[in-house]
Amino acid sequence: MKVTVTINRRPEIADPEGTTVERALHDLGYTETSGVRMDRVVHLDVKGDDAVAVKALVEEMCRRLLANPVLEDFEVEVTS
Amino acid sequence: MRTAVIVFPGTNCEHDVVYALEALGGEAEIVWHRETSLDDFDGVILPGGFAHGDYLRTGAIARFSPVMSDVRRMAENGAPVLGICNGFQMLCEAGLLPGALIANRDLSFICRFVDLEVVDTDTVITRLASEGERVRIPLNSYEGNWVDPSAGGRVALRYVDNPNGSQARAAAVANERGNVAGIMPHPERGIEDILGSSDGQVLLESFLQSLVDYPLVPA
Image (cartoon, rainbow over all chains, first blue to last red; front, side, top):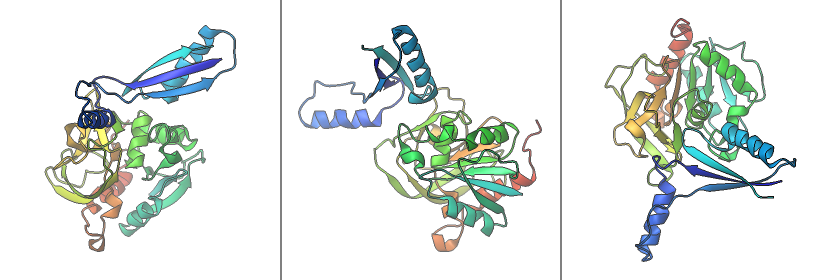
């Protein structure tokens, strides 16, 4: 099954990359922009036909390796 | 008293660490990350570099290397465990130290001498230093910005000018017990005047003294 994981830094943790990109957007004149955060997306193919079980497995992967629980939250979406 | 200096694919400071420990009268040996036993050693140093290419997050993959189970066992038994730069990132990822390291505040790779101040002298790298003592050693990192949302970390040394934006100006952090520490600048690159500073000596001598006094705090 195709799985998409979005890993995002928790709002209270600084995101220096997002801040820098936001500053560059402002320099280009897009001053209406704020709250730029650089999330990370991981795509996986996982064997199995039970979407609930696959989702649970990938969430376990997130907790153990893909995300750092000190800094990040994650969302797992089984797409097909 | 022997120190294991662990090498992962991409580690690049191991020889500097061995040289520094030996220059200060210690005994050190390089150990490959796939080893499973550290029974012959009294302490561990995880040196700097770019283990596993820094992929995913710095230290995130290294923490699952086979040797890390024994590093954890030693840490839990009170043995001296020190992570320098990339090693500090690994210890945070492994949950042996609080917090995590993110990109420097200004997104620049910082490579220069920095001034540090000793805050806590009851840790494996500061026990021979005095509170308020200043040391000047090189910093060489991009992800050196320490954050700890739990605010539970014990800061051993802090930056005087905080070049990377670390929370509490932390340059070195220890666990509750003081036997596990991580430091972002490189004490091993500041042990002789010819290197520009010998201030790193007191930090590595503290580590060597901790080996003698093992365990740091009785279990």
